Image 1 (cartoon, rainbow, N blue to C red):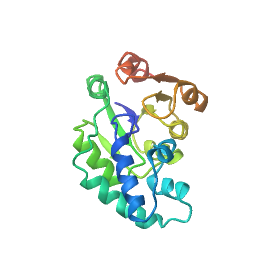
Image 2: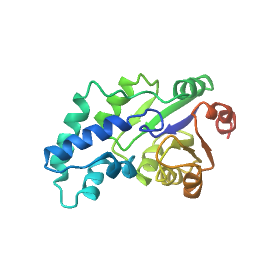
Image 3: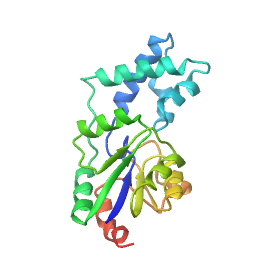
Length: 202
């Protein structure tokens, strides 16, 4: 048995617009006008940390409460599964492996996102970012690779002692992900299917 780890937002699902919409509404609730351009460079970072960076001194606890309410009740902004995700998860299962999601989203939000997207994964761990994702990955057996779209996902892979596959569907391109430590980069999750035998047999 082997395990492949995944980031969630902008790696398996494209929740970018729902995140931006919920964040703008939460900032507005607290009296701050923040546009998408100010938020986009922070995608993939825990949202309460984003709030502190964008509006220094903000009450991050109140912001997070409002953000979660807006995100959870938004029934109009779609969150599509990224191309190739279902194909790759199926290939991992067929090869005798398991798929684990480790996300910066809070646990309940990560579980809901996975369920809403009908992603067939073995486990979901939320509330982790950067190296702390790697700490979570070490709880699972025989982790062969971690896939993510953020440069901090490289730290997760290093902490877990596994290769990092950078996915260019987020805010970071091939060069940035490779400089961060990616062993390989892909623009489509379906490309990982061809790489899977090498990781599964590692």
